[in-house]
Each structure stands twice: as structure tokens, then as C-alpha cells.
Image (cartoon, rainbow, N blue to C red):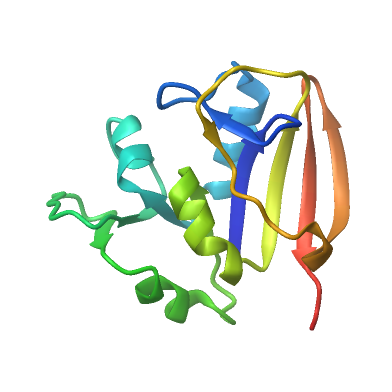
Length: 157
């Protein structure tokens, strides 16, 4: 299974200067809890923003550059198909965690989206890519302080 986790405001803003334009500790806890002990698909810029690999998670870092990362929890890949084929239809979950270009490349393959819809409007420079909301069904909404977690699953064709 391929899922995607993201936080954005009502304009689908996800970033400012390489990080999130809000400070929601509860959303970071939600992200940590959801991704713990899973495989992650992450872009190079987002990965480098972490400073080090996230503990108890395996990272597929998608980049077009030559990149060497010497950590057993990281594999550098150059084509999204390298992981899509492994996880599509599998019980094992791959979680796409960004950034914007990785979200855009992964959206056609995503089975489930976990969206933290952040209250308010923010300024920033990076947006979640457009997607057809009609392709997904909202199966759960969990209200939190400052945001709501919307779980969407892809509709059967």
C-alpha cells in the first residue's frame, strides 16, 4: 500500500523557506506516530532538512543527483518506479512524506492520503500539487487543536 501524509492550509500551502509555516507540536506527534516503523519516500531537500534520518523508519530518498548517504536506514533511488512496484498492492505500507515534487510524482500511485488541514491562512512558497478530489473518498475526520486530520482513500475504479 502507498499512502501519503501532509499538512497544508486551506490554500494547500505546505512550506516556507524549506520548513512548515506553522508550529503545531500535536501535528508533529501525529506524523511521528503514523510513520513510526514504516518505510518513507522522501525527496532529497526534505530529507536534508531533517539533518539525520528519522529514527525507527526506513527512508527511500528520491533524487536525480548522485548522493551518498552512509546509513543502513537510507536507500537513495533515482526513479519512483523503484519503490512503487515494491509497495503497490502490498500489505507493507510506504508513506510519501514530501516535498512538493515528490508528492506530485507519487499522487497517481497513492491509495490513501492523511491530510492535516491546518486552521488559518499562512504565507509561504511551496504548495501541495493539484489533485482530483473526486478520485478519493473521505473516510474519517479527526478534529485536533489547530488542525483536523482528514483520511482519504482512493475510490475503486
